[in-house]
Image 1 (cartoon, rainbow, N blue to C red):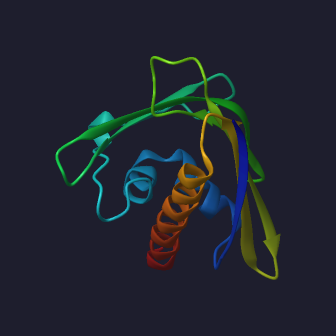
Image 2: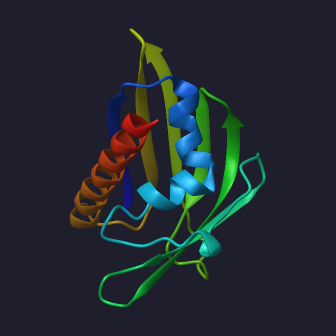
Length: 145
């Protein structure tokens, strides 16, 4: 099953600051897990360049972990970031995440689209909810800067 969804958020920050949240480990580890899930810095690797890879381990409140991996396909700071993502590292299938950052009236409109194979509608809906929780943390991080 093919899926695609888009989440658009506006942040009171410049595009470079919002872009940094995606590529700097000290920020990524905070928003990618939200407050409820831990992504320890020592489990995180971000080689944010075209052809570079990334990986993260989420530690869930129930004691389980999720291993995330992907590859950066495009890195055009601070306008566009394209990367692959999966929580099934042994499988070749990957979703593609495309994020654009546009400055409008002194704020940044971040548009994130994820597309791929294998998610049912209920999984897609849950993923959108998860991303919105991630982006709530991004908003808080940017307010602290």
